[in-house]
Length: 371
Image (cartoon, rainbow, N blue to C red; front, side, top):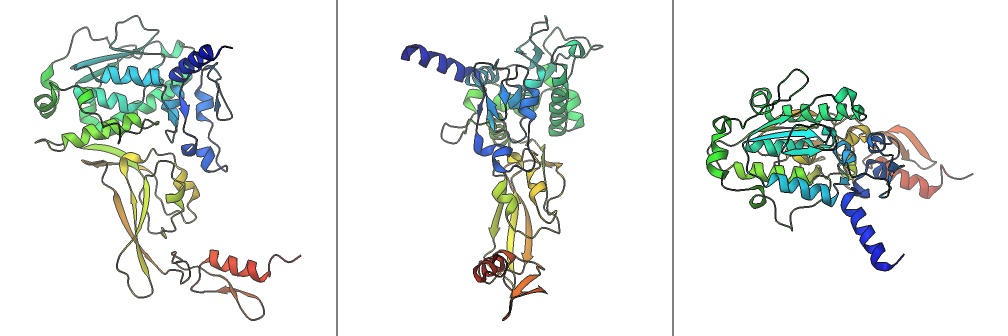
């Protein structure tokens, strides 16, 4: 194949297919809990064992919407189309799949491929009318569940009352709107402060915007933070876990989080014999993939719940105080294990060295590993 022809084909394939950010994939971070959601939702069978075949992919981007860690970057073509739509200044949006004959502002291969963050961005400007008709007869009816999950996330994001005012799902028994809805029902502060601006003037600059699977969420958060300076700042709900009383600030969850939503910071001052750590979670970064709860050895992370906030970039902080290892400085609350004695390991004793440092000592003395 000539070099130019190969270049053009590869370029077109890349622009029309999602791309895997492998270091954010749950399967790359651990193997105990395999994730196959992208493979299950793919209508063309383009994803096998975590590998996407560009020649088979149809560019529907359904895998992007279903990925729990947002490790799939939208295709350039899909992303460019979404940004073009977001730049329009409208009071009322009609969304449908390509099988619907009704004229819509945004048509998709399937409603299930639409991230809830896009719907949130559109409904910031006005009202939203998704057309959900004949989905039960569609060859992709299994994607209806993903669409319903996205709608529920949007409902939680807005709150029940605002959701009912701004989102009107047109189902089998609901008539499709035939005219633009009133501008008066939109947010007053949004219309007065931003009605002459498009989304292109409100997105992040190139240096701070990371075009990975969370690109739409980044734009949404940036927009919300800009609205904080208005006379009527907008509160929204985000789902993220909280640290429980059993958390020991071991930091395992921090190391394995694919979205860098969890952080640990050691306090500057400590009480005698203990140290204090601050465990924090950044609301907008958490995608509720559940990996942190699965790997926590002490059930130190509670179930993810929706929490109302005016600043999703502000960390939610929990203070943890615990004894620490005199060798590595890591927390070790209530640990018991083998303590090295003169004749070998003594079990059930408490020491001021953590289990990892103990294991290194035992390994070095070959008490456990001699054949």
